[in-house]
Structure formats: C-alpha cells, structure tokens
Length: 134
Ligand code: HEM
Image 1: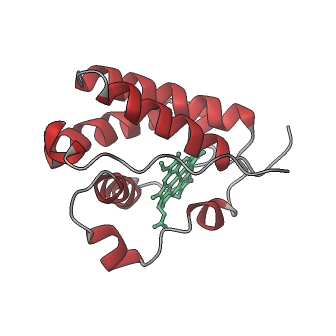
Image 2 (image 1 turned 135 degrees about the vertical axis):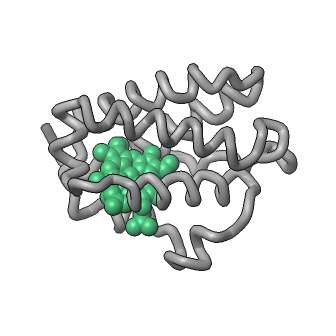
C-alpha cells in the first residue's frame, strides 16, 4: 500500500492566528463530548476518564500547528500510526472520528483558509491511521 503524501507543514503563525490554546482546547473538548455519545468511537476510546486522552490530543495539535512543544516534551516523538496500532481503526471509525471533528472545528468558527487547512490535515491524517480492513 502506498503511503499518502506527507501533509504540508503548517504556515508560520497559524497557531496564533486561530487564537492559540483556547481554540484548540475548545475544539478538542467538544470532540470528546461527541466521542462519549458515539457508540463507534466509544468502542475505541474505552477509558472511563477521557481527560488524559483529551490532553494528549490537544497538546499534539497545538504542537503540530506551531504552539508549545509540551506534547513531545511529555510523550516523545508522536509516531502516530504506531501509537494507534492497538486500536482497530477501519473506514467506519475514521468516518466517525472525522464526523465528530468536523462538528467541533465547525463550531470553533475559524476563518478561511485556516478552517480548510485544519480540516484537510485532519482528514488525511485520519485516513493514514486506518489499520484494519472492514
Ligand atoms: C482515524 C480515527 C482515529 C481514531 C479512532 C483514534 C483513536 C485514538 C485512541 C483510542 C487513542 C488512545 C487514547 C489516549 O490517548 O489515551 C488515540 C490517541 C491519540 N490520537 Fe488518535 N485516533 C484517530 C485519529 C487521530 C488523528 C487524525 C490524530 C491527529 C491528527 C490523532 C492523534 C492522537 C494522539 C496525539 C493520541 C495520543 C498519542 C499518545 O501520546 O499516546 N488521532 N487515538
């Protein structure tokens, strides 16, 4: 299977332009609110307390988009595909994940072109996490 193209690195200034940490906090908090009510996602995110998972996703996204490097300071190299290997992620899970993210990003009200940049990054990265045939 050929790998998808590496996503374009974010433009300098994206993190501040979208409002910094509060914006990422809002998006990821909303995403996890949706996770707990979605049976497909709840079957993958099985921890009773999803607070730590929320912190990791928020810190990763903040770092990726040019914010503080707390994620790697605490967790090391992201190695996202490897870290997702224990979870069964097929097209169904990818679609559920992106559906919740789409709502969360939509509600954050980012201006274009940034909303589109963030959305297409999330889409290509989520597809890259697929590790199971249906
Ligand atoms: C395709 C659908 C996806 C599913 C079903 C999924 C599911 C999960 C699950 C179950 C975990 C473990 C929760 C935890 O951290 O305790 C996790 C961790 C994580 N996911 Fe995803 N994920 C998906 C896509 C993505 C994408 C697109 C990104 C980034 C853009 C991402 C970033 C992360 C990060 C940063 C962690 C924490 C890794 C660590 O430091 O251990 N995930 N994911």
